[in-house]
Image (cartoon, rainbow, N blue to C red):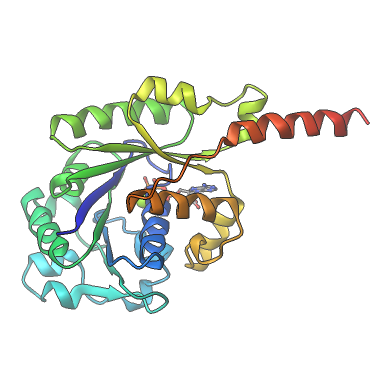
Length: 264
Ligand SMILES: Nc1ncnc2c1ncn2[C@@H]1O[C@H](COP(=O)(O)OP(=O)(O)OP(=O)(O)O)[C@@H](O)[C@H]1O
Ligand SMILES: [Mg+2]
């Protein structure tokens, strides 16, 4: 039996879909069988970020409505073995799906996949309830800003209430430079507030935006900081012990470098 992990946040736009696409792809590149599930019914995006939008024929709603078998709705990613997508319906809304229906889909998927990653919509209502219904574990994504952290804290409470454990944190769009000059919270501050384990830190990386627009998850190229961060997180998910590099130290160092450059 594989693991069902919901990727969630509370606040919108903090990087849930980016995280799901990159971790799903990274896990497949590591040889795991993975299905990424878009639970953002009505506002699906994961198919675009994965570059699979033109191949989506059926959605989870079609499976629920018995229009097709679950296996038929899975879109195979041809770039890497073992990676598939289950898309969300665009023409329905979140209330058209019941949490139990998503739970049933996830339980079926976990019988023949190592990882089922569910991309949650923002918010704490039905969309979140659907996305988390079949999950045993959670990845909470936040950016290091006060409103995202407050919403993450709320979501962590709801996940704990639902008995979902472990709940791990991905700190996204982290900027060592901004931390270094005191304009962004550092990882210790964020962890102090949220009090959950840190799974990894993804830096602010322009490559994420271009890769999203091209439909090629960043992890396919291995040179950028963002790609390496996602690969490390994926390895941690497979149980490997990969230390979290001290990005802040780099910020501190680059501050010194900047200071020297400015004062040369
Ligand atoms: N590490 C990063 N560096 C730079 N840009 C990023 C990073 N992570 C995400 N982004 C950008 O932030 C935007 C929002 O990302 P994404 O769609 O993954 O968020 P989301 O949490 O899924 O949003 P929603 O709540 O609407 O579903 C996208 O334009 C994406 O390219
Ligand atoms: Mg999203």
